[in-house]
Length: 70
Image (cartoon, rainbow, N blue to C red; front, side, top):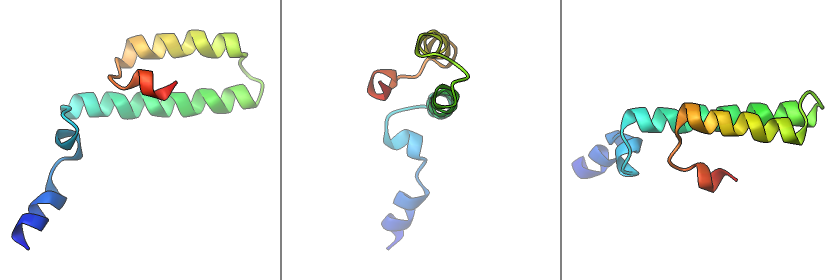
């Protein structure tokens, strides 16, 4: 029972081999991706603009999992 409690309390970022800062960057990048998708669907940005903004976001947030988010 006690070991199960420790598993629940374990920092999720450490479970995936990331620091808290890296995990934070991943979340921020993913949120930016979602917002870009909304802007694209509403016609506020074009696909070309979305790609350029995404590249800038990758530079800003330095997500380790960016290749997975394609």
